[in-house]
Length: 150
Image 1 (cartoon, rainbow, N blue to C red):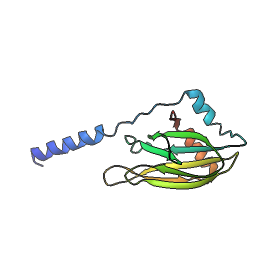
Image 2: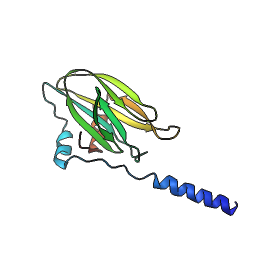
Image 3: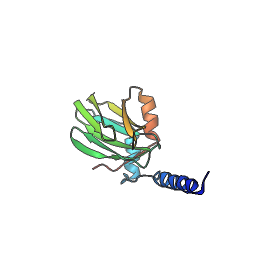
Image 4: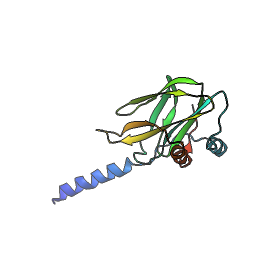
């Protein structure tokens, strides 16, 4: 390999690995994190957990909007917790390929939406999964940290 090609390859690695740092957002106090992880619900409201269990693509934060209201930005291994009124809702996550998921919240129940980075053309795209396996979703959330909501 020619010396110029080696220099270019080295620069490519430097750029790639420096872009792989962790994105930061304000984190919730540990007491709120622990309380959210009890999964206790109010009888008249539903709990919504939007989480990103993967560290892959951690440098990218995904903006999360519920019914047109910004909830926060989700970096790797974090979650958003909000209580919502029963009824239909729409969650929107912005990325290279933005996604929307609609769901109906039931009073006294939890809704779990998993945000997964997927390969995009330039930046990570996103996939949303409305989780049906409550135990799996709760284990995923327990491995994440609660962000400070907006």
